[in-house]
Length: 299
Image 1 (cartoon, rainbow, N blue to C red):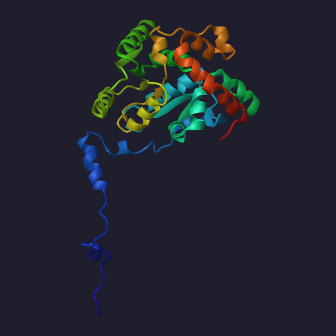
Image 2: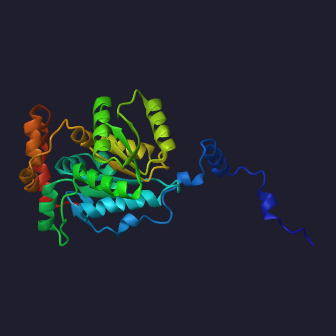
Image 3: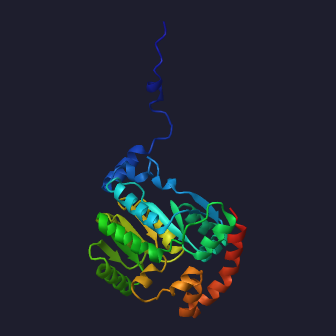
């Protein structure tokens, strides 16, 4: 009678590829975390309850400012201590529609977001023409920040403000602390780095503070690239919101357009009037295609 084969014994010592699981575990342990840092949210993302519609080539969430602020704080607090990838929230406007239509790499930066808000009245107007589920209102980051600050102050959510120059950042943080004395801003830093090591060190410092909400104000597409480049390093953060030129407005460097211009979708014109040399040619180049994209509504 022949001896019984042992497939496990036979496999020992062969040339099959060795699993890297142990190596991964060791590497993560050395960084003070656990294997959950390397995965997404395996329990599902509650942000998927938001209805999405196609506008200008991107899927935009159908929500208003109050709901957007509440969901951001909800998610930030629910993820505290879970060490999952932070929720990545960004915004689109005419310029973003143009960039995504002419550059697939930039479009990919936005399609990886958990939610895209419509930060432009033209998107709201277009949604009433091309969709059966129009947007209820514009969710401008310059307004949303204050909605989130109020909600966070009431519920104890913390913030970190990353971006702009050192001076603008300090002015913005000071203004926010004066306006919202109960809001916990656990840290702040300008958005300029001397190199990859400096950038990684900044992320490690932010991660150590574990802010519930991280605002990244670096401008498109730098802020989107930053989020995706360091999402894993920032696993102790609850929600990351890209913010464009938000800190300049908070610092009082750039005044908001009159409300009547905001309501009829002409805030871009106000910005051109304030910064004609920087923004004039940009809007002349991007606006015609952006309007076409919104009305044609490509996917």
